[in-house]
Image (tube, rainbow, N blue to C red; front, top):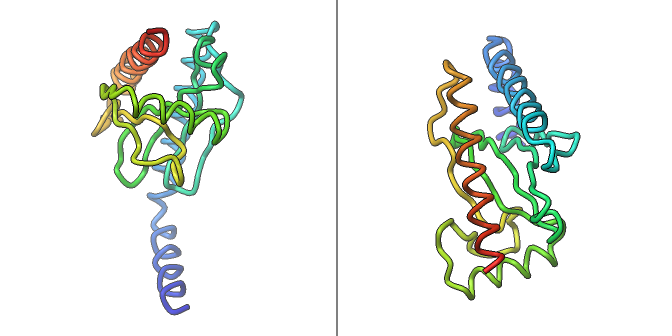
Length: 163
């Protein structure tokens, strides 16, 4: 209980400074703009209407091709807060589908992307770093890097699944 009290005092002190709120709002605004960018530029892809804001651990939205959606798979563009990086994940509609594709990739030996060590406790099947140290001073370039690497990720997964 003392740890919680100490953590809450620190949290309150940091909030009083006002910087965390400003940075968090700017980050969430950027992610909403990024989601809208993908939705508008790629109308043939599935972009659901929500962003998962998380618990300051990760924030993400889905961006999925028809081919992956037809397999009950999805791609998530993820900001990992503590590591301060953007990743792209291959995920599934449910744990059963996740297990099926995780096993398929593991057995194939395909290692182009990082396969999570196990299904239990993970939301992803595959993970890949898009931008390790994002430059929020140049959002246009950041968006282009995320877009290019996400499209390559999707293309490579579709190619693997069709082989």
